[in-house]
Image (cartoon, rainbow, N blue to C red):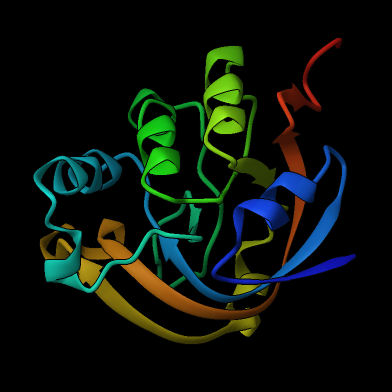
Length: 170
């Protein structure tokens, strides 16, 4: 297991390889299909700082915050996958979710020194890894708002890095 602490540098993200098992600690964001397009709009408008959001070296988990716990949503949903290149350009170094992402997205992540990792769908277990949480933006979306969490030893497996994917060649 490779321990990682956010914020992640380009060098750290660039050192990760497909299949690496990681334990992520530090600040991460939660966002899925309802909120990520709005975050991309804030990027375009230069308004992230108004919400105290700093994406440089960030990790974004494709999930909502539910009373039942945390669980990854499919990262290949149109609203999520189409946001990943813009988020990577804005400094996100690690995207966490589940499922296969497209080759164009994999290339864009590589170009912007970002990687994609998958998490096991063990929703109830992730709660023990959370130390703090706050709604960073769009509270009106309820559990699908953009959350900021402090986590310890959040497990994942790198699924796309260095312009490669665990899904290629199947």
